Length: 267
Image 1 (cartoon, rainbow, N blue to C red):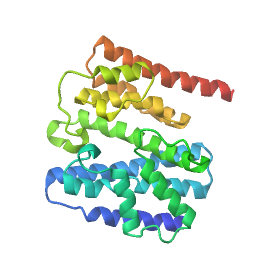
Image 2 (cartoon, one colour; image 1 turned 30 degrees about the horizontal axis):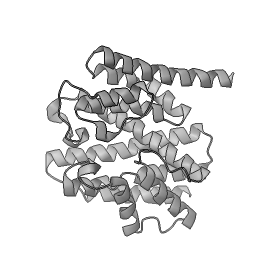
Image 3 (cartoon, rainbow, N blue to C red; image 1 turned 60 degrees about the vertical axis):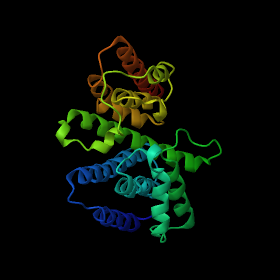
């Protein structure tokens, strides 16, 4: 991929977003938050790719994948008024369908087209298939990390805002109750990712972001978590119970341990 091709894709995405312009304030907020999310995922992906010393063509391809990963969110929300795949459609599959239906990638080499479609389709799966080739696994993991990192930002900013300013679809329709699920806490204590099917309240949704920290694939991703103080910010949004404090400490220790290990290897 070359710069001109990526520039074309960015122009296409900007024009695509205008198709969903609406005078309805709540809908506009939800579309805008996904447009900003896309740009932030691109920035995260480029940083991680650069830290991995990928070459220029690879970085451009990574940015294109990040740019396209959520194009399905727009028609998803337009039709169903939700970002919850479980009650609407698989937004990753819909993203691939949009790209194929509009023939957006027609100017690329067949290998690049296939890579974008494959990794866009895989970006939201719970775990990647075991039979992926090394290159596809690298690009998929990279964009999955970049996506999770910005969803953490989105979630934190959502809860830091006044209720009247929030884009309501971010919360996936979960009730704002003081309770939280033992299933999600158990996953964190075992050092595992939690499943969205275990979420029962908004507190579970916040805890899910902590559980995601176990599934980040690159040291650069963990450095971003540390720099942006995501763990501290998420902790401040959760009830200060002993169970929650333990979960926060476990994820913090995991991130810090991996970062220390990387520094020691680099000496």
